[in-house]
Image (tube, rainbow, N blue to C red):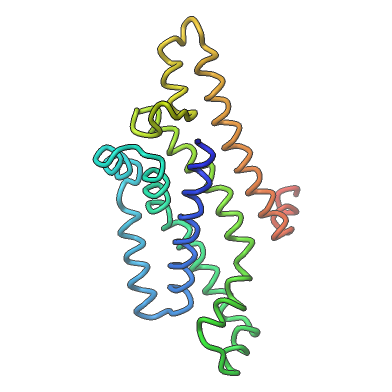
Length: 205
């Protein structure tokens, strides 16, 4: 359940972030200013406490958890995508496509977004780990996945009552969280190195 929530909420996060970031970076001007101010407005809210408020008010159903975690995590992805779009839109092949009369939607779909694939994939893998940690924190507090469904967070909370005599009830799900988040972060770094070998060379030096 923790993996399911982490992956599906990541899909919402990346989808919203790519949409808003791409529109902001490519359109520029007032559209860029408006979307970036909206992004900054979302970023100033303490995300975890906002999620707690929503979940405490409307319940901890799995669809709600996926939706609220996904929709409160997109600003970082949007800013990353916007920065990449600003660089890509100035490249010669994008300028050539615009010069021959390609519509903005076609330029974005055929020339700009494919160039962002590596950045988006890396951001997505790292985001899965972060969202798993958010879900685990909510479930530990009793606001996330509710019984009879199980998640690593509420397994840690249940095992904490017996930690002095049966410590493994807490240690095993906690290690599962740690290991899964570590794997997704290492996967993100590996994909980043594959997309730009210069980063890997720089670290080896």
